[in-house]
Image (cartoon, rainbow over all chains, first blue to last red; front, side):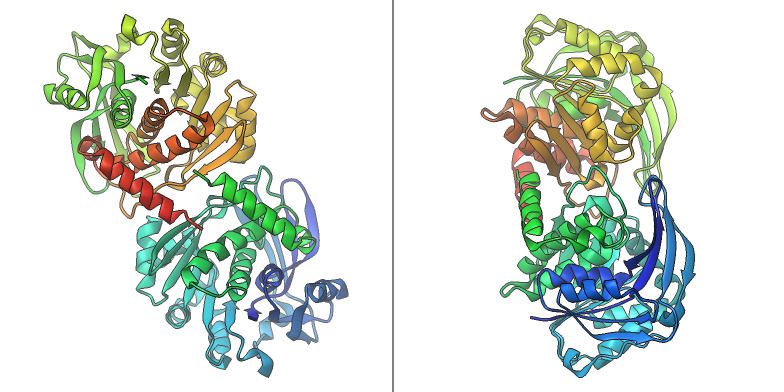
Length: 299
Length: 299
């Protein structure tokens, strides 16, 4: 079945202690759509400016990503610049130039309105609501967010969380949303906000699913070197949803496997700047690393 | 087969944000020996003062722990007082009264010198060397340590690491020992110091084994409430070694399983102050939680 990905499409300038790369393809929707495309036909809703490099459009098309929902507007593409420390869990934003993204209103082409699997990638909760309003009987809606919206649009976000099947947050967002330091306890609290499924991302430590059938501990593929973690969370969510859309049968079983596949795509994402590694990824390489992860977790 | 546990035997006064408990049974050897005793006949080498409560000796005996190596010396038992913050990963020492521990020289009774599985629990590396010197053809020696010795006795510690089969450290110690921020990379570096097996403990995030056959990602049993994490690492190491001593067959398979059992005993340890929860644990409860952990990790 099809997957709809809504989020930001951006150009990222990224500095790490080891290298610097300007104007990479970035944004939550870009990473997530590429990740989903390995598993299911993927539709992308976003906005870029006239400066958006043609090669990035070609990259999306090579992954057979449907771009009918990608608006190309007069002006400049959203540009984010950030810098990572030696400990890649710490980053700071150097620059945020919204450009055309400031006027973004996600409008779904009619063909997208009945897409069954939907990722509301990290954008303003008001825009995520707007997408939900256009959907007709989605099977599964997963919402991502970021700390910015916890601070700037908490009410919108809390109303959104009530409306979705699954929420994905990272551990610090889970703590901030609940005021609880213990992630397991925080997860329980997050269910009270509405969603049946709660996923907490813990970076290199994997992720935790809380579902009606219980918890699932999703391991992360261990990397000896992280080149650039930007987009890893989006790749995780996109890969997870793509896998889900490609499967029949028990939802929780599929969710567990989807987290594994998402986690593996995210690990590849971290091995290159921007989408450099993801872009040349194959389904065979993903399957191979999933098998390796299975061996690493076996007891 | 038998297990020999060497380390500290202490009285711990522990404050958390929620409660305060004075003079609990503590010390690396106490926690580790109790954990090991669920799986294999266990010998304990340590020192206590004349003030050591009789009920703690009875507790060891109830677990059929051989106390021939426990010295009872004139003076006071090692007393440690510490305080945990809301985030239980942060603790500070309020008081350290060494008492008889200051004169501790671990002497192995003749019957202990051929014990095949040995845990050199967290004590000064010079004392760990002294134990190694008394052993005759041990099958498997696991050394634990703490940040104190990385700062105060690094040369002794590095010489010790060369002499053992396996080293267990926590993630911050792995970083400090290698200067590498990435734990996977740090693990590779630690092998160059000597040991065939390197285990990195990551608290609530589980543990990582690096072995000739590859890495193993050991999950931690998720707890919604941690009462007191003191001794969790010692319980992990003791449980692991006890399991190992109880098994035949492939060492790496046994090590993986041993880490799971150790991790589960450590999770029980965190559910009570000191050894309160561990003391009333049964092998059946451990097996049940291992089975639960297996379900939580299944994909």
